Amino acid sequence: MRNLILLLDSLEKLKERDYEKEQQLFSELEKLPKESAIEFLIEYARSASERNFLIIQHALVACNTSAEKLLLLSSEAFPLGEIAKNSLFITYTEEAVPTLTKITKSKSSDDASSAYRTLGNISSPNVQKILFHGLKHRSNTVRSAAIDSIRIQADENWTQDIIQAITLLSAESREKKKDNSEAINALRSILVESVKPKSNPALLAALKSQYTEVLKVAISALGATKDKSATQPLLDLMKAPSQGLEREFYTHSISKDLQTDILHALANIGDPASISDITKLPPSMQTALALAKIQAPEAIPAIIKELEKSRTPRDTTDLTDALIQLKNLDAKSELTKSLESEFVNVRQAAALTLYETNTDCIATLEELLSEPSADIVRIAKTLIKLGNPKGFPALAAAIADTDGIFRRGYSVIKACEEIPGPESRDLLLYLLEHSPRDKIHYVRDAIKTQSKLSESPK
View 1 (cartoon, rainbow, N blue to C red):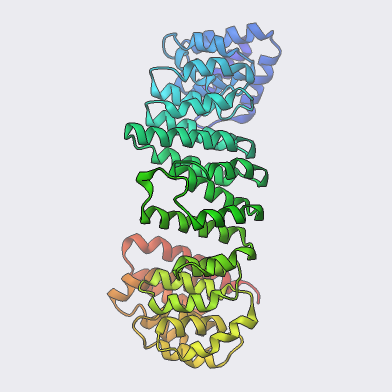
View 2 (view 1 turned 180 degrees about the vertical axis):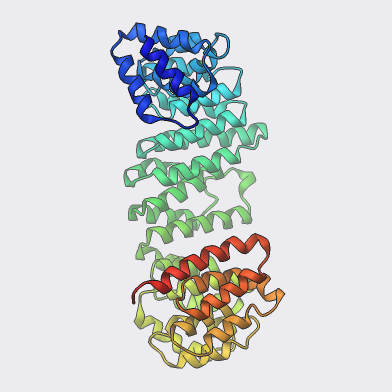
């Protein structure tokens, strides 16, 4: 015992953890009978220094102290009670499940949360039901802990239970006017991350739910499985998006919202069988992007139409990116005539898509530099890539004044980060001097990245 006391006393005096000495302590404990080792640790813990709390907690767990014993000790005076309770919360064994389940019912939301988080790290068939029960807790903190643990454990075999939990939360929201949106959204992301094609039967059944929240979750999850067997059921739902909803939800806005979700799901699945039905829908940005993701030739005219009426830089960027990512080069040849379009967004998208194969695009890109609504940074970066002498001056002009730095500074930082050479470094140094304080760290990171790029052998 003397060796153990000396080891613990020496650990207490250290400013930093000494893992070698800690391992030596565990080795000494292993030489003792289990009960003797536990009793020694308990007695030492009664007057332990805070520096040694962590090592004693781990030692109690290493000695297989029972969860019930730790629970009993947790009611003791400080510091033993605190050490015992924290030891219990790092006891990841099947044997600890009943004890931890008791603590989930504690009046202390901190203790209940810790119990749920510990349960999330225990692989046991008995844990699943307990974690879902935590979704009913009155405390947001406890519910959040239960959800985090569900995220750790959930796989495709949890699909039905997660859908059931979302259904119950949706019903509670409807009946008690309670906002459960945070929990529902968290469960939705868990489901989307964990589903596999074998989850489809439960997800398809959920398409008949009366609750909008459940429908939206099932639609997103079906898209995540990328299983083409879901294509037709989703198309059927898209034709009558209100079919499962209660009367109060028969509204145009909800139907349109669901239709957007279905389009995203169909795009993720990527089944050409859905193209015909999507093209029959009223033209929209969502239908154009969905067609592009499915690699449909019909995407090009659809995107062009949306670019003609695009009003925000974000929409223009998304549509342009979708156009560039189309792999059907034969269909892209239709874009050549778009280089003469009266719409800046269309000319810009066409030039950025075709510049590698069509030399006429260079003149178009140069002309676009004088258009106030054009994406100057992206165009300049493309010209630099082509070795065009107008690229760097255009990039510098984009941040020539305070307004330019405010609106385009971050875009220029990211562009220069990817371009080797002294010109882009000079622009970054200029931005380092003139950028707002909250953007300086972006510039410094970009300088480091750009320097490595410039130094790397070509």
